[in-house]
Length: 132
Ligand SMILES: [Zn+2]
Image (cartoon, rainbow, N blue to C red):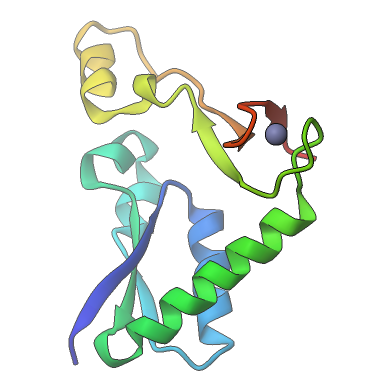
């Protein structure tokens, strides 16, 4: 059977939550590059994150489920500034977390990549706020 990438994740917990959601709907799926990311988080960006692979015939339904899950999440976490649900849980700063930045860090001996904060970002007013 052919598998296609439904989504990618930078952390183990999000990837497993998504996979659990799909599996509870009888979607045939698995995580690719999970071990690489878990054993060595520095490599996460180099391999492009953990990939959620879904059986090709089920990809349409899988994407619908992921979209609905996201919508539910957004409705539960509206922007406290303007009330919009057009929000996303993002890593910041994004620019410092690309693989080239990580590589330069390593080469220069600075050590671990910069810690990445996870915040909610509102796309309507630009407000950023801590996860509850
Ligand atoms: Zn807002």
